[in-house]
Image 1 (cartoon, rainbow, N blue to C red):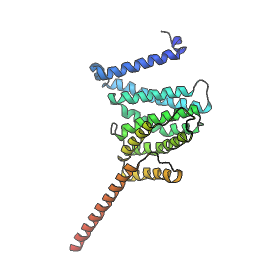
Image 2 (cartoon, rainbow, N blue to C red):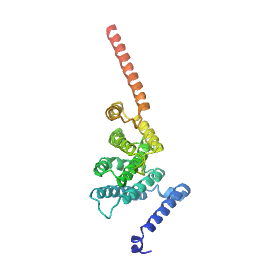
Image 3 (spheres, rainbow, N blue to C red):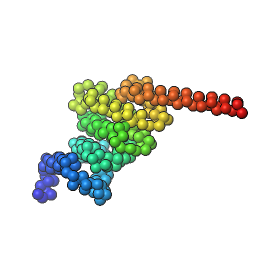
Image 4 (cartoon, rainbow, N blue to C red):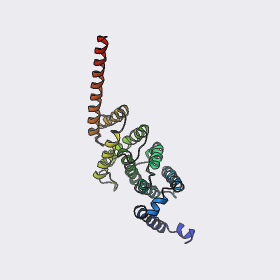
Amino acid sequence: MSIDTLKNSPELVDELKTSAQEQVEFMLSEDEEVRLLISEEEVKSVVRLGISNVISMLLDRLSSLIVILPECTEFSVLKTLYDIEWLCKVLPRMELMKDLVVKWTDASSEILVIAQKCELDSRILGVKVKLVEVTGKILEAVGYGIVIVPSKSRTCLLKIWLPFIRRLKTLVDAEGCEYEYRMDEDLCEFIEGSMVSLVLTLPSNDQAEVFGEWMRGIGLEGVKFPDLSEAFEVWCYRSKSAKRRLLERCDRLAIVNLGH
């Protein structure tokens, strides 16, 4: 099949890509030789390069939406996001999900700067909702311990994406049924569950910052999503217990000092 044929047949390219993805998924789950092959560092290096390339492609295509380049539409951005979502499915089987999490975390600030410059219309809304869905996969991987990253990275993910997700949910709800793209109940519960699990893994001071941002959203904007009250109650209990243990230790030390 010639390159020209592929260039002139985007539908055929999509079909071939879908078929290839299905074949990869099958081999990763059923083929012992493939599982041995992907453990080789050379193969992992190629996959890591692919992860870097797809994140770079996402940033380029998002940037193109701002200047409305005719050759780059929201559909090309959505295709890239669907590819990243597919990676979230197969990379854990290759023990490479951490590489995607790190790349996504590093690119998150730039992704959101670009996304927030785009005017909110039916085209861009679909892209932003898909960004949230992909981010949910990243939050899930970190929050449930599939991927272990430093607390600084975990805190960064929450502090960057929490305000964006909250504002987007408010905007989508305010539009009612005008747009076809929605943050439905299943997606919201998925995001909340991942965030609750993730925030509970943070150091106490970082938790306090996240809860401060969350409560500001409730107090100033009246936005209750996501509901982090369960994690907040756990944090309060742990903080009180830690304070009580500290006071008890101080009392014991004072008694010992008085005895001497």
